Structures are given as structure tokens and as C-alpha cells.
Length: 268
Image 1: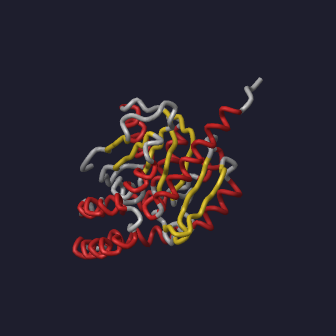
Image 2: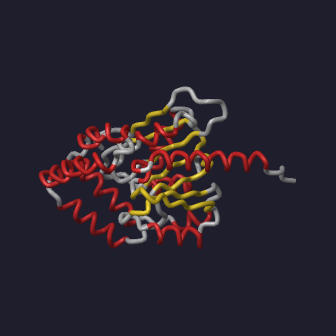
Image 3: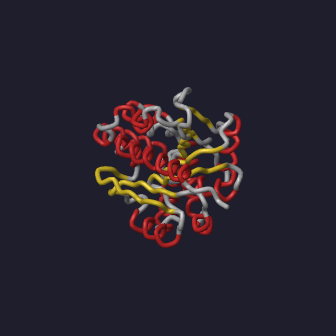
């Protein structure tokens, strides 16, 4: 492992009773693409964000245990998970472990079992075979596209340089390892029995995790699913490409669930 799991909390002071929202990043493994969403949330919740270690050995259980330990060290024992893409697999594993009080799960381009496992395996092979030189060229091309892609999220655009700097050879290997974990993961039994409310958010243009398959499975097999929203001008990275709409929807879901619990009659 090249580094430890990292955690940041925004803001330091939040209104009394404000919820805690815990961001679990996707395959890229860090907080460099969530700045626009964080700003759009506007301090209405305590926002906790992670950067994973560039590990080539961790299992999903190790990821979940690392997240739990980092949260406990900061005195955080309950909260909402905002699980982006690969982060959804970490969130389901936290659910299965039963050691953290999850108030709700919001999937952002997330999934249960990936609907196209063959594509994940192919991506794993491509990621393992690509050279660092070619990766650098791809990243530089991505930087040019990012100027247009994140034009509505200046905070995310400002972090693109950090995002590029983190794409090292070891980072490529760590991403390949995470793809392997996705291909092996099947948390469907967990999603069928999860007690916490589940919501899902995605962009309409998502070839990475095709949302029609994910939505259909969740509607049929996940009783905890409350709502599945498609944001039409966003893509797979819905938090980065539609930060304002995503933040508003996420906050509404957290507040709605909180009010439902307050108004629920006491059990006899």
C-alpha cells in the first residue's frame, strides 16, 4: 500500500441536527471530482469525503473496514452514504458488516451487481495492458475535454490538475485491482435485505453503468428503494457534471427521510 486512506470533513461547523453525508468515490479513488457538488451542498450537511489508498491487495471488506475506522476516529458513528460507481460496492459491504449506523444510501452512478460484467473484465484487461505513456496521452486529452465537460462546475474544473497529477503508474494498477473487485462482487443478497432507505441518481448518458438495467433490478428486488432519478444533462459522473441538481436532490432525500422518521408513530 502506497498511502493510507484519507478523510476530509466540510464544513467544520454545521447547523445543529444537520445530517452527515459520506462520499465514497468511484474507480478513480479520490475526492478530486466532487468539488462542485460539495460547494452546491452549501454547508447544509456535514460532508465527509474519502481518498482510497493505492492498494493492490485490499478486498472490499478491507475498504469497508478502512472507511469505518477512519469515521470512528473522527467520532462519526452514523450517517448517509453517497456511493459513486465503485463506491457503491464499498457501501454494500459496510451494510453487510453491520458495524456502522447507515441512515440511508444514495447511489450516484452506482449499482448492485454490475449489469455488464464482461465489460468490466474487458476494462480490467485494457487497464492492465495500457502503458504509462499512453495513459498520459489519454489524461491530457481528458483534460481538454474536461474544460467543456465541467464548464458548469468551476470547483471541479479547478481540481482537474490535481486529478491529473494523481494518475500515476501505481494509480493505474490500483484502478485495475478495483475493476477486479467489481467483477467479482455480487451484493444482490445484501441489497434485497438492506433496512436503510435507498435512493439512486444517475446521468442519462452512462455507458459505464447502464442505468436501465440497474433501475429495473432495484425496482424489482430492493424493497428499500425509494426513488431513482435520472438527470438528463449529466453523464456517469453525475455529481461532477450536474452538481447543483445532484446536491439539491440529495439534500431533499435526506430531509424527506428525516421528516418521515420524526412523524412516524411510536411502535407499541
